[in-house]
Length: 405
Ligand SMILES: Cc1ncc(COP(=O)(O)O)c(C=O)c1O
Image (cartoon, rainbow, N blue to C red; front, side, top):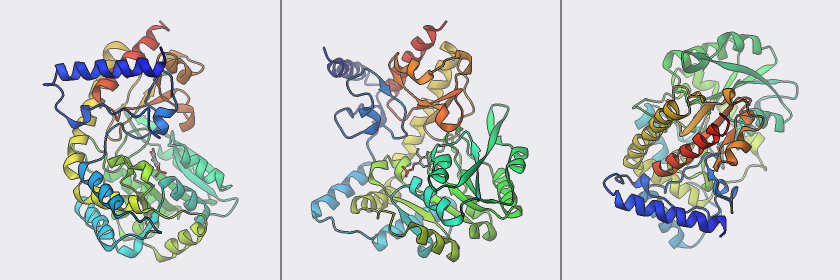
């Protein structure tokens, strides 16, 4: 029997279980969608193997129905020439920013991007010369370190610290790391992988620090709608006019509405000079956003609200399941306060594994190696999946840890 066949049986058994317990299957997010037979990077990685992929950050959920409908409509038109956003698409974004963050953004501040990682690379290229430094916190989403390096710029890292069980910026480390060659602070809010949503007073400290050291703030806010427990996101650019003028804010509907493969993102750059320098560094090397990306983006920001409310509740349930399961069955693994994202940051230092990802893979679960984030003592688990899949993943983690006891 091939692994794929075994997996299909497993899927079938699981759907029978869910059907038999239909009273607990009351969310659209409980539905299991087969992704092995698709172009999914996440699932292709373990093709032919019985390993549940819980690594790269996309979810195993369908996008909201209005988004699917908008995509169908756009495809039915049948012509896919070079694209520009329609006025209604721009309007949908400006309305969303006003509605969610009370932020009055002008159309000309928007720079469309095929992805946020592109934005991190272009930022590094646009606002520094070789020899300049770019400051960021660690552990961090790898392109914060790789982006500058790909552009031959050096990165200075300031480690995050724990305040109780919550990750916070270490201001002593920030002051030690910054020098006269530092030109940019690459900031991540909400924070991947530490799952923090920074509070106003923390943002104000970032603001004061960047003003004192005359740093451009590139704020990656891709996870800004994936907040749990009713939290509210505050774009750093909304703190003051002065901060808006030294900032680039990177956003996208991609993480929230599971549209990463459609490549539609935005930089919001209020300052004319920064925007011109960014556009100039991007010229000729940055792909344009495509027709489907624009269509999905507009529909998501206009009509995705009810779906998103349900998603946030579902993700909070998954987060709670992880916390209670690990506390009860695998207390060797350390967890932190988890405020946002569907990415759980786990301290596995007590397991003393040489190659943690390989060990967990050998027990049927594929995680992301913390070493990529500058923290080899950790792994990251993507819980953007049906709860039954997550439960199976956790069972496999338990088996993997039991094998070490
Ligand atoms: C903080 C952060 N920025 C950017 C990205 C990826 O952005 P994109 O796929 O638009 O390049 C991710 C994906 O996980 C992320 O977590």
